[in-house]
Image 1 (tube, protein in one colour):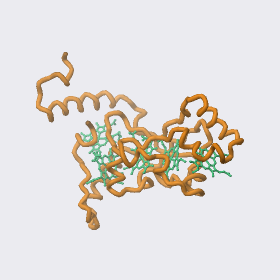
Image 2 (tube, helix red, strand yellow):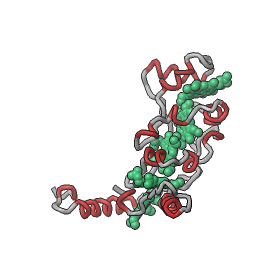
Image 3 (cartoon, helix red, strand yellow):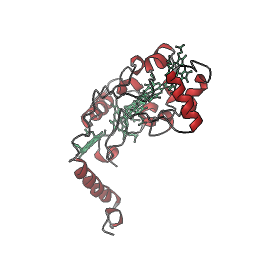
Image 4 (spheres, helix red, strand yellow):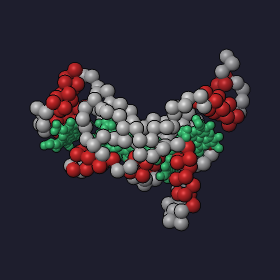
Length: 185
Ligand code: HEC
Ligand code: HEC
Ligand code: HEC
Ligand code: HEC
Ligand code: HEC
C-alpha cells in the first residue's frame, strides 16, 4: 500500500503528489499534443458540411452530451436512423448504418481530438459559459471530414482563460481557472 491514495496527506498535498507522478509519466509520451491538422478517414463517409452546413442540423441534436456532461460524445447509430430509415436508404454508405443497427454493433468512429489523460476539460461548463463549439473546433459545419484545427495545448487553454478573465466586456464575470489543479486532477 505505498500508493499515494493511501498516504496520510492533507487533500491538497495528496493531489500534488498524484499530479507530479502523472505528469512525470506523460513527459515521456512524445505523441501527445501534436495532433493539430489531424484528419482521419472515417468508417462511414459522414459529412458535417452536408448535415450541419447544408441541412443546418443543430450540433446538439447529435452531440447532446456537450450540454450536460464532460464529453460531447458521438451519436449512436439510432440517431442517424431517425432519418435514414427513409432518407437515401439504398446508398451504400447509408447501408453500413442499417447493417450496424441490425447487428447491434456500434460504428467504429476514429477519434479526432484527444487530450492526454492528465488534462481535464468539461464540455458542459464551457457551453454554459456561452462559448460556441467553433471557438475550439473551427468551422466544423464546412468540413466534409473533421479536422483538428487548434493545437489544444496547455498554452492555448491558458490564453483564452486569461483573455476571458480580463476582457472589458466580461459582464458575466466569468473566471476561468489558471491554477494547475483545475485542469490536472
Ligand atoms: C473550450 C473548448 C471547447 C469547446 C467550446 C467545445 N469543445 Fe469539443 N472538445 C474540446 C477538447 C479539448 C476535446 C478533447 C477532449 C478530451 O479528449 O477529453 C473535445 C472533444 C470533442 C468531441 C469528441 C468526443 C468527446 O466528447 O470527447 C466532440 C464530438 C466535440 N468535442 C464536440 C463539441 C461540440 C458539438 C461543441 C459545442 C456544443 C464543443 N465540442 C465545444 C474542446 C472544446
Ligand atoms: C435529420 C435528418 C438526418 C439525420 C439525423 C442524419 N442524416 Fe444523414 N443525411 C440526411 C439527408 C437529408 C441527406 C442527404 C440526402 C440527399 O442527398 O438527398 C443525408 C446524407 C447522408 C449520407 C450520404 C448518402 C449518400 O451517399 O448520398 C450519409 C453517409 C449520411 N447521411 C450519414 C449519416 C450518419 C452517419 C448520421 C448519424 C450520425 C446521419 N446521416 C444522420 C439527413 C439526416
Ligand atoms: C447528424 C449528426 C451530427 C451533427 C448534426 C453534428 N455532428 Fe459532429 N459528429 C457526428 C459524428 C457521427 C461524428 C464522428 C465522425 C466524424 O468525425 O465525422 C462527429 C464528430 C465530430 C467532432 C470530432 C470528434 C472527435 O473525434 O474528436 C467534432 C469536433 C464535431 N463532430 C463537432 C460538431 C459541431 C461543432 C457540429 C455543429 C456545427 C456538429 N458536430 C454537428 C455527428 C454529427
Ligand atoms: C486551463 C487548463 C490548464 C491549466 C490551468 C494548467 N494546465 Fe498543464 N496542461 C493542460 C493541457 C490541456 C495539457 C496537455 C496538452 C499539452 O501537453 O500542452 C497540459 C500539459 C501539461 C504538462 C505536460 C507537458 C508535456 O509536454 O507533456 C505539464 C508538465 C503541465 N501541464 C503542468 C502544469 C502546471 C505545473 C500547471 C500550473 C502552473 C498547469 N499545468 C496548469 C492544461 C492546463
Ligand atoms: C475559447 C476560450 C476557452 C478555451 C480555449 C478553453 N477554455 Fe476552459 N473555460 C473558459 C471559460 C469561459 C470558462 C468558464 C468560466 C466560468 O464559468 O466562470 C472555462 C472554465 C474551465 C474550467 C473550470 C470549470 C470546470 O469545468 O471545471 C476548466 C477546468 C477548464 N476551463 C479547462 C480548460 C482546458 C483543459 C482547456 C484546453 C484543453 C480549456 N479550458 C480551453 C474558456 C476557455
